[in-house]
Length: 72
Image (cartoon, rainbow, N blue to C red; front, side, top):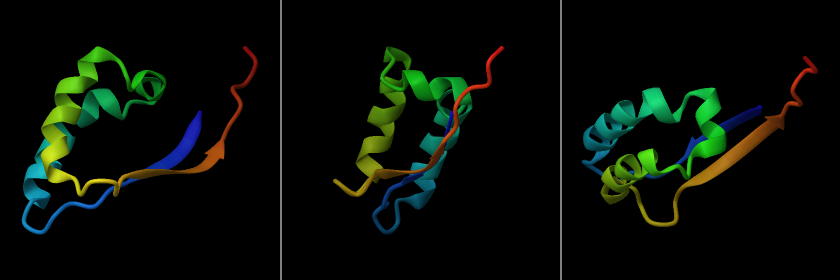
């Protein structure tokens, strides 16, 4: 499990559009189980929709902690 934040810059005046795309994407993408499969084909339409609202080369992940899974 990862404890992390996703940082990106949005051009002035595009925040509402970017947030609308992120909310539509959020339920599926930001579920904990989805972190392992973010390159899965079902996420491509969402990332393509968000791309016009992101400043190129501004996005980055900050990983604060990697937690080992508990043995079952």
